[in-house]
Length: 173
Image (cartoon, rainbow, N blue to C red; front, side, top):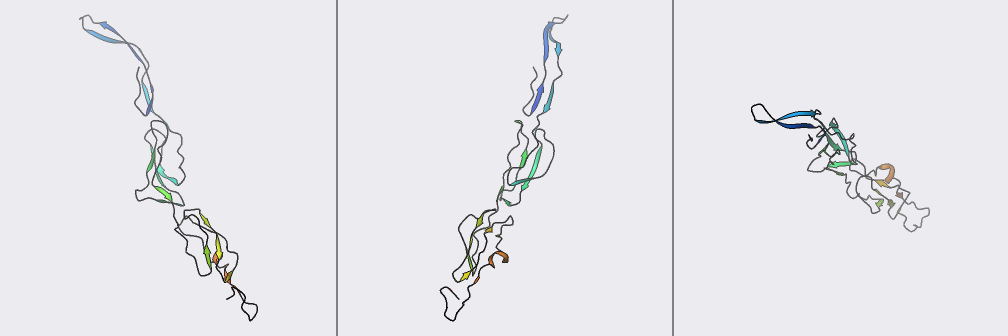
């Protein structure tokens, strides 16, 4: 029986029989055989895991690979991004080297402050107006660029309270 090396599939058979030649030396004669065929195993079409994107590469056979990059909202680690390779087990290796973007803690402004929460891509925080200010600001969200979306459209919703009489109302500036 012919068996294929790791990463290959197929095989074949060769049947032999021992005989002696007229010169009395022993030798083998092939009595039947199927041509040995060993072909590289194939992996399914690769799908980039969460946080990654396929940048280049082709083929789905054993040892074919895809160069990977970080998807939007993810950043490369100092070790860099690896590739995915088709293995003998007909599966793709897992890439490494990408992590969620970190926006760091948001900085409160004069008129507003932020609730507690995460700092990674997609995280949201509530926004509240500080004492002496009024309004209904919306939440902020950590963006793929690594910055919070607290632009003038969100934080401008906190405005100084106005006084309606000569006597200052509590919290009125």
